[in-house]
Image 1: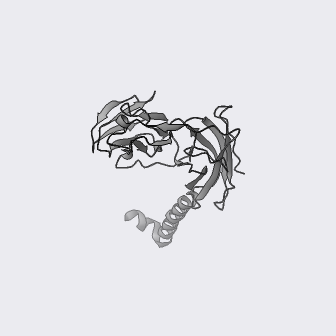
Image 2: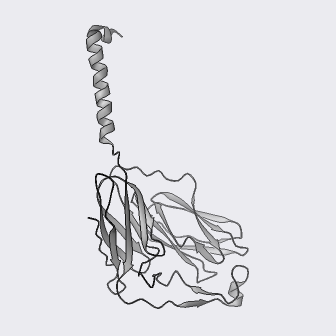
Length: 256
């Protein structure tokens, strides 16, 4: 109070105005425009043959129809025959200074109908994953990783097991009881991400203006490359990425 009295009314007003200006400057420095990165990942080259999966009656007991034949997502590329769009490709980017808030509850990977759902999950470093078993029979959770260590436990019907993934890498998840089952949890340092749909398309929301190197990964094609440029108005040209089985993990993007 004495300090304000010493300044006088004019000085105090100037001081308050100074605080207001500083506050305005801080607000102006924060990005107010949030853009959207959209794109498509397509396959380059001859389409691979999709192998059917035959499940024996004994293995099918309690969790899937006897003799069911399905496409094995863990071993077969999911490629749209007409557009050559690739499904289950992880596309991530990192915004400097953006703080990722980890989910309070574990991210769920479910075992249902003797399949993992979803087949590919993306989580930030430090996220806890709960591997659930929604089937009426026991399953097994066997994870394969380098940086996060592995777990190999039986999960009874209706139960789950948890794992905290602290380091960025692709973690393979399998069930030793039903060997056709497979999934991946992709752990990233990125702040924004998406997984491509059946037609190879993806959308990443909430990205401020700037140029970003894209982190691209597919379970069979490896890593790819791409760039996205979000303009000052939040718009972004379609990012096009091509991946090839012959040239493992090669990709290129265009976001300008």
